[in-house]
Image 1 (cartoon, protein in one colour):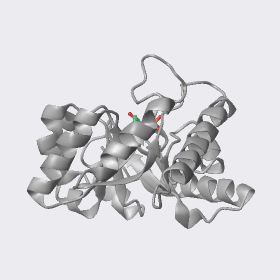
Image 2: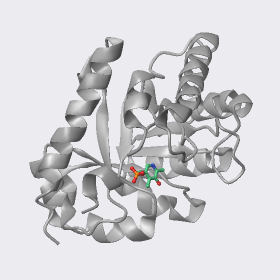
Image 3: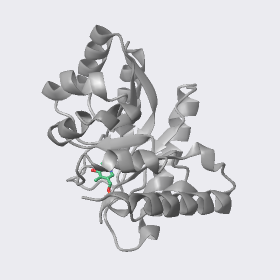
Image 4: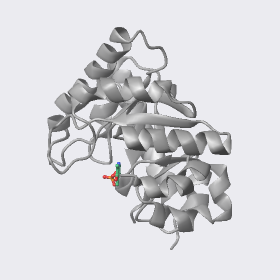
Length: 229
Ligand SMILES: *Cc1c(COP(=O)(O)O)cnc(C)c1O
């Protein structure tokens, strides 16, 4: 597979992120593009690097494993973005600096324990099920505070913010209320817990990343638009 097309795609996505930032007066430097490579082969990694991408996201350990063996893997910061089973924590912690899908106390404790054992810190985001769709993972908005309070007391974890997935819809504008609600929840938690550093919002995918950036996303997770031929 020749991933030469990735360079042009990355350029286009970056231009669209910058335009979205301009519309709302944000600095584009505050938005990181996380390339979601789950459907691509490990050969995509050098192409992403050449395109200036430095963050890669994977949602399953089994699929990430092959890519992590590629020599280019070390050039990236790795983000775990899918449902994480506790028995996979021992594999994920040494390779992934970020976990966007923290959704339960048991997982927070397991991540913390493994991070301490390895002498590392895992950057975590609490996944919130804003839209209330039953098949989506994440805590209900009213449960986020309890998990946040627990996670920030655990050694080995640095709580960076919140993550959500919007429902798949044809019109990206339909995702706007979901993204706005995540930002409002973050602002509320930040002031209620007098928290500094709850600054990240992981939201927006191929079809709705511009709306997410307008609503405050700092990490956009882009798969298909970047790596699918
Ligand atoms: C696959 C995936 C993405 C990327 O989705 P695209 O629509 O391909 O951009 C983002 N976040 C999560 C959690 C995913 O599983």
